[in-house]
Image (cartoon, rainbow, N blue to C red; front, side):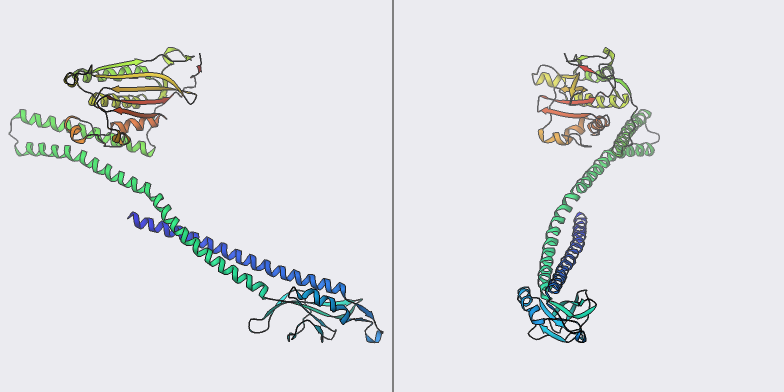
Length: 455
């Protein structure tokens, strides 16, 4: 499918470029041809003017016409001057009879008194470009001057230009075809990656949905098959169905949240959010889980390194959506608790303590104030090869181990990243195996009251 699309793109690139090149080459051809013809015509007209000024005119009796041109004296020097330019002269008397010519064999061409240049075909490949001028003196016609130039002065460079343009256009089209194939590959690569991501996303979502649906179906079938079974057993089956239904609902809600975020339809209720108070609330919600695992959960709020003109309540207040930011840090803290070593793991590994530490501080980035929150755990860590994919949807560092003890769907970090981006923020991760992982969230302070004064 992608190869066919790539071929079509390359063909379109090459076809459009070929058409443009042909139009360009045609324009160049006619422009050069017209320029050469105009130059020859200008040369012929210039020769007519020069010869006209150099004519030796003699006075004769009125009965003979009053004026007469001395042909021998007038054209002797002109013949030598035009020989090197491949220009031929012909002089006709007022009756149209040829009196003098530079042609070895004068062509049999009817005389036409026309100041405009014209092309005359003599048969075969012999073609002339001619200008005929009627010469007057005091309303007396002295004769006719015809100046000729061989047409090969135009055809020879035009033929060479045609060959050069044809060869150049062909080579350019071949090169453009190769470049078009390369560029179409680059253009289609993001589509290929998106398609692969969509396939992987669909497969992962199907896998996440298939297991709970199958379990629900099994429990429902068992309940229908044995309607008179032990009530306690039926109660357990209903609880399983309820738990799996809640899991499916949460998964669907997460998918809808990410879909709205991708389409730009995620609505944010912009309001002042004291981030310190929000973190305290989130930590209180997670404290029970931490105590069950024997993990110490703490919050450290750092004093600003610069003097702040706001009140203490506004020092850590930003504009954002409380619910979304609460979800962001809930996902990060619950992820840290889930992947931290428990108290038993710490004692077995003879480590100091199981700890998840959250730190809030006000920093300055790009000359603007920001709030930075770090969530640090003392867990198993993440391999370096897995870090670039950590925020991918349904991605798990160790699927076999995670599925056994985790209720998550693999969307928590993807949702956290989407919320951070929705607040013009950034989330990064740093991890070392068997030492822990640190998530860093940086959010801009968009409040108009924010103003820092350096100490």
